Amino acid sequence: MLFPGGPLPLRIFESRYIDMVSERMKSDSPFGVVLIKDGAEAGYASTYEVGTLARITDFYQGSDGLLGITAQGGQRCRLISNERQPDGLNIGEVELIEAEEPLSLPDEYRALPKILANVMDDLGRLYESHDRSYDDAVWVTYRFLEILPIDLRQKQLSLESSDTGARLKLVDELLESVRGP
Image 1 (cartoon, rainbow, N blue to C red):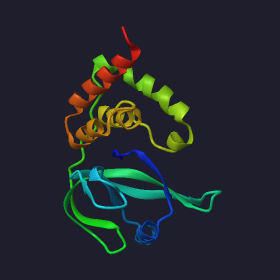
Image 2 (image 1 turned 90 degrees about the vertical axis):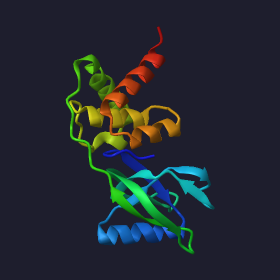
Image 3 (image 1 turned 180 degrees about the vertical axis):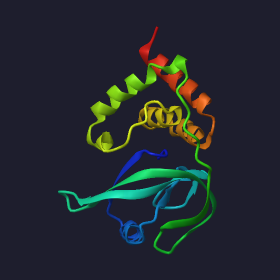
Image 4 (image 1 turned 30 degrees about the vertical axis):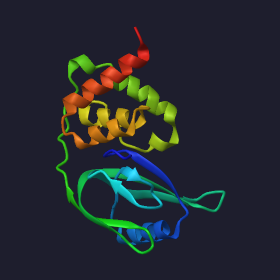
């Protein structure tokens, strides 16, 4: 699951993905990340239609010899068509979903940036080089939704939504349920 602006660390060991990463890095172009709805990544799978474009921002060889990459979420996209190549790599055609304009955080949610800042500082390296926009409700909701331990279907619905107010309400309710009475 990847939200716009969010990090995606991956360990790459299958040849189809090594080839895809190599091609994406050479062409400096993004790849799409869509959540599997039914099936398995290694076999037949159906996916949700809305996902996020990802651009590789870093790569390294792990101590186990595997390729590690970090990608960053870009624009949301809608899958128009897809096919599975003989090597098992799924490729598709997408249309871009218009990016949400930054939105000032409403006063009733003024505590959220401080909570998020504390959590992001604790998460360490994964977020240390990312720009932070604590005054933008769009950015704040995406960060919370990617790190909160909620059902992937709920995360997917939030990714598909362009209603920042609804996402703010969801984040606030989730945090309230953790805090308790």
